[in-house]
Image 1 (cartoon, rainbow over the protein chains, first blue to last red):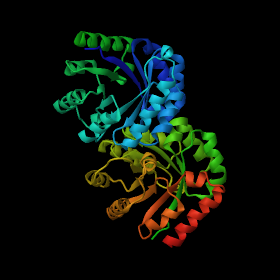
Image 2: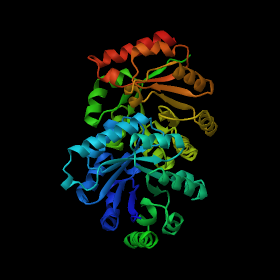
Image 3: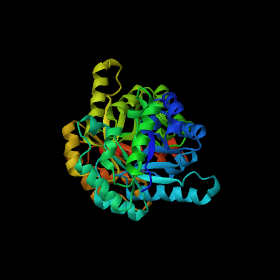
Image 4: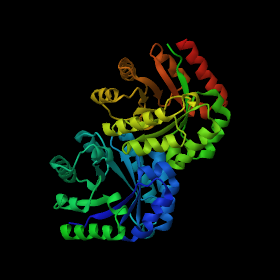
Length: 227
Length: 227
C-alpha cells in the first residue's frame, strides 16, 4: 500500500499569513493547499505565489467549483495549480468540463517537466449520494476529498463508524481519497488499512508550537501505519 | 407585487474587465454581483472595489460558501458586500453560522447608513432537496437563488415546466427568489405572476452591442410584467 501524502491546508485569510506557514512547512509536506478561505480572500494570486515559491510541491486550489467548469479549471491551471476541487452538488456537466480541461492541459504538457498530472477532485462537503458518486466515477473522476466540515465539527460531529464505512466504500469504488476536517495525528490509526492517498491537516500543524515538528509527527505516524 | 430588481452578474476573469462593464451599467441595475469566477480570480479586492465605486448599489459576493460560514461571511461583509451566497449542499451549520454573522453585523450597523440589511442567499446550483429547503427556511434563510447552471445550459437544458413549478413552490414557502442562468429578456414572461425578487443577467447584458440599452430593455419588460 502506497504511503499516504501529507497536505497542508492553508486556510489563512491573507497570503502573507499563508506564506509565514509555508516558509517553515513547505519542505515538510507533499501538497500545498490554497484553501477556500485563502482563494476567496486573495484570488488566484495565492495559487500563483505558492507555485512560484514551491515548484516541486503539488499545489491544490480548493475552489469547490459549482459551475463554469471549463473557465475555472483553466483559470486555476493557468495560475499554477496541479489539482482543483469541484463541490459534490455541482451538476455532472461541471465535473466533466473541469476534467476535460485538465486532460487537455495534460496532453499539451511536456511529461519531462510535469510534477503530477493536472487533476480534479470532488469535494464531499455536505450532502451527496452514492448515485452521484457512481456518476463521478463514470465521468472519470479518480480522486475525492472526504470532508468532515469545519462547521459540522464545531457543531460537535466527530469521526465515526459512518465516516469510516463511507471512506472504505469510496475506496472500494476505485477513488483515491483525501481525508480532511480538523484532522489530528491521533486520528490517523482510525484509517489504518485503508488505501488513503492524502491526509490533509491545517490548524493542527500550522498552529502547533513547533509546526515543522507537528508535520514530521504526521509523516512519522503515516509511515508507521502504512509501511 | 413588488417590482423585481435587476442584478448584473460580473462573471469576468479580471477586475478591470468587470469595471469596464460597470462603468456603463452600474447606473442601470440594482445589484452588482461579484461573480464566482471574478471572486476566484481577484478575491475580495473585487468586492471592495465594487462597493468603493458604487456605494449606493447592492453588492453581492457570489462565493457559494460550502463551509466556514462565520469566517467567509465576516470576510465578505468586511469587504463591503451586502449579500453573499452559500451553496445548497453546504452543511446546515454553514448556513446558520453565515446567517448569524450577517445578523451580528446588522445589529452593530447604523440603520441610517444601511443600504439594505446584510443577508445570506442559498444558491440552488446542482442537487438539493425539499427537506433541505425546509431546513434553510427553519434556519431563517429568506432568499434563494434559483440557478439554471452554466454547464447545464451548455449541455442543452432549457427553462422548463419543472423549473417553474419549483420556483412557485419555493415562493410559496416564503423564499424571496433570485432567478439566474443564461437569462435573456425573452425569458421574463415565463415568470409573470410569480413574486420574483431579483432577475440576474450577465452575458446577455454585458455582451450586448449596447449594454445600457439591453439593461433598460430588461427593466422595461420587468415593469411591464410586474407593475
